[in-house]
Image (cartoon, rainbow, N blue to C red; front, side):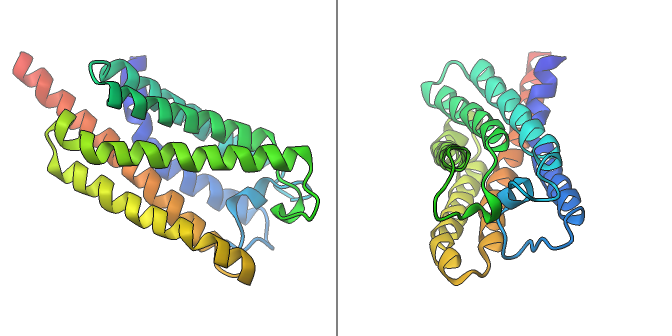
Length: 212
């Protein structure tokens, strides 16, 4: 039962992220989804400082860890597949850490606190780990699941996600569209993960049918 839940956890993540960020945004009337980082919903001084990690970072972290463990246990015959699972698991730990260590007010202080530094480090680990996992599945899609679609979908998803990430420094400088580019980057990444989860479900269903 737990193994099946961990498999489906990947498909839950995009919906949970969308609903959680939407709810936190509604609770913070001055928040601007286009210009502000998602981390600002949990920033010190924010009206959603306490609630945002509880409905976003922590449960999402658990879902990522569950799916990462599923990849590790199910595809243990492939070192690269295990590595992708470890990266997803690390991403989940990073999500929990980013929620625990809140960023300072506005998330861009001149003199960052230790909590801000840890938050930034957690965010970097989250970005790096999920990006590595995505690029691994450009190869693993065909190799492990026999799906050229998944390989190409992984490739284009990571290109879009990386492109959006490269726009973030300019957005910080201009003060415009940081939230938009961040949401494109993370949104594409979690949709990719949900697609991987769905493809694994289909693959295992076909495998079970052949076994029977």
